[in-house]
Image 1 (spheres, one colour):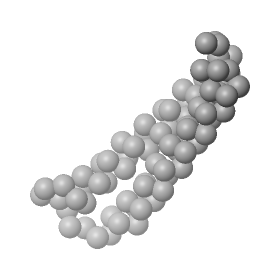
Image 2 (cartoon, one colour; image 1 turned 135 degrees about the vertical axis):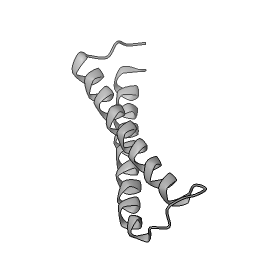
Image 3 (cartoon, one colour; image 1 turned 120 degrees about the horizontal axis):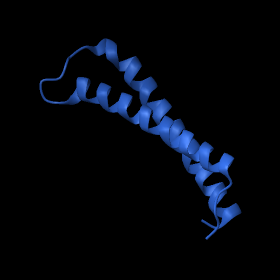
Length: 75
């Protein structure tokens, strides 16, 4: 198993942090809209859709970068 160069490790950490932040934001909206005793505020739907799209993109970015590292550095 190879050790990642510092800049690659930092980029992986940055992408993971972004994905985590997007997940937290999405879950907050999801709970506001769909949990028991949830708000029935339909105005939140565009924000919810945007948060879901951003979460999906952040996870895809992380997974793509992680895969490229696994190929390049055999991790």
